[in-house]
Length: 95
Image (cartoon, rainbow, N blue to C red; front, side, top):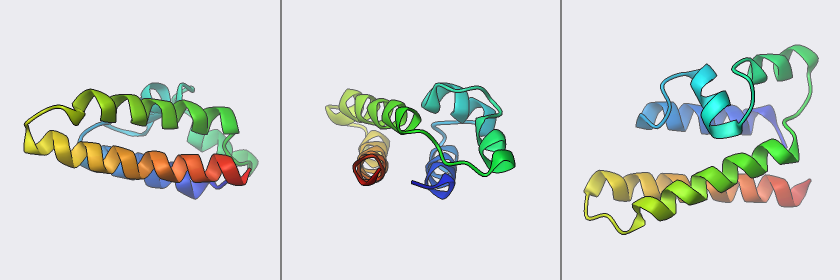
């Protein structure tokens, strides 16, 4: 597991408009404080399995909520969320 994975997910969600910035991503998608990524970097530690599990669950939940939509943008989000969830699931399994 790597902080790079968390940063990649953050960047993808911000670019898609699903998160506005890093503090919001940390609170809404990771269930952590707004300074979570900064703390990981400062202490040179990896994100916890629990944090990745929360993120994977939220990605899966929102993908499922949007899956039945006829909106093309929603389908793009479903694909992105599914891909990011798979990355989380793989990191969790490797741990």
